[in-house]
Length: 245
Image (cartoon, rainbow, N blue to C red):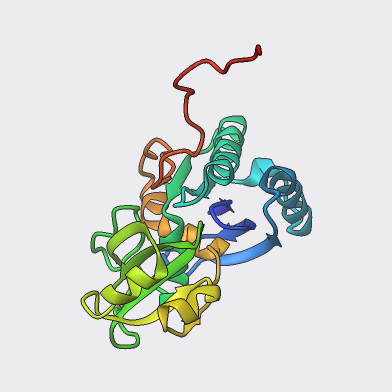
């Protein structure tokens, strides 16, 4: 199955064409772009056109779309989700939303195989539980000197989160969360007092892995729901502003 994977939940704009094997083995990336920047609206669709040309296919060959639904900032998430929905509607293919942190966790946890067991709430395929001791913490930049985070078991199954919190507050909770390693944005390593490995942002194969159970089962996608975790900065004015002397 040829899947288009998109994510704009972090400062990295991600687009990839991914082959999902029918036997449930780890997805393989045909072509991908990861632009470091915050110009999601300007960079996403050019990246999609670039990877389609690189993979020597056309958009009509895409059989499904997977998009990261955050957590992330308002503008970034809207760009990714609306673009995915528009492409799915134009191509007549299903669009599956996944937690962007799940994609990082699955990629960090290693490769997986289907075993017929239930997946996560996002439809991720079950995986071999082998891995380093302790749970996996995934962190991304929430701005305002805070981080988005979630905790996963060694197989990449989400245990708690996603949440948003200052790294110093999260660091105090790490022992009770049984965290043994971390993945995601390495800029938070010092404040969390943890070594943080990659991937720093959701990779295309991790995004597809997070939706693989639903994709291979042909499950009807759930409505796309962005994970904002915060109220918007803009608020409705409470009174009229005086404009005369």
